[in-house]
Image (cartoon, rainbow, N blue to C red; front, top):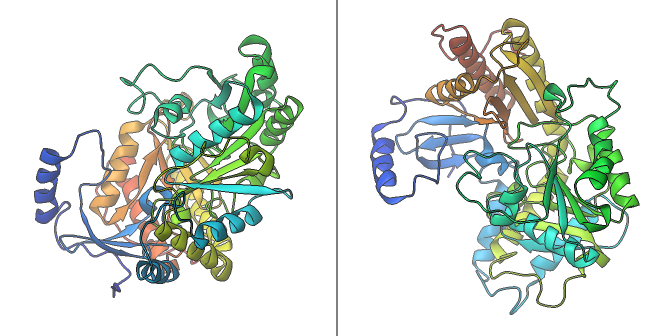
Length: 463
């Protein structure tokens, strides 16, 4: 299937009649907890373009929540999956192993930061990867406690939900949570937990980890510190460059396993293959998922060989972990990154987005902060630059105005007041400019209260 057009085309009001009928069936058949961001049902997708069941065509700035860095139905991924379909679908790696699992582990061992022996475990999802990373850290250190951060998101299983910060809709009603999990403030400079200013603060929040050992949990009881190099669901918060080297040094000094959750930041999203490279840090264990599978479920746990071997034989695994189709897809994803310069493309997309967002910030004071790394960018909306009261309703209205005019884009943040960019890196220059035009028009319509037609600004430049 090849989509012949690369621009937005809306044939019906959004949602169209077929999507509305499917939504009625969905409400009757699917639990309400399985939320959705748009009210349209997809029929096909290619690259950065989605077509719904009513024939409406959308530009995709959400990427299936960061799973489509190489684009929908990437050519090499589709070819690899089709070839695997002709060989076998499932045997379970723990019963009759297969070569692609081993090859993918070897490649991830070589690509992740750190010049030391590594091993990789493959699982199904980011949450499962984080769970296993914590299990491995506990087995290696023989310690129980885990330290995580405010505004973090690590998953929806019981352990990863315990590590996750945001209460609604994620945690409320699912108590009690796992014990020996302790939370400290992240380097959220726009909303500093200590009411300090960077750089005069000298990254006090990072050094606070040592104070935590005195006031909350003893260092010798801590197995791991788990952290996202850039907060994902928390609002795409990128800490100052000094933050992670301090955290890493404190972990090393106290024999604590440093776990980097690169589920959303990995695979080029921040302008490097892994976000840790942006900070010059080397985690003991790195987990990634989402775009690794090119649209198929897959996650990895890569770490120091001696740590990864701490659990005994049979202590790690799962029936479908590292399934053959996903392994074949992931190898094709890595090939695509190497051959198509997608990391460099991510950096250019981010630069273009920031240039537009900074101009919008001058026009609309409700844009309080523009932040992120590479193509992982966010705009935080506030009612007032002085009070910084979160503008959640306005963020939701902007996202709604976007999909009503053919652009799929997501919100984020603990307060739900951020607009985030998760565009596939294969989007064309013209498509990206068209999407920026829709987003700009949505900002104008919501923040100025004026009806505007989604259009590409005449002044927009190419990447």
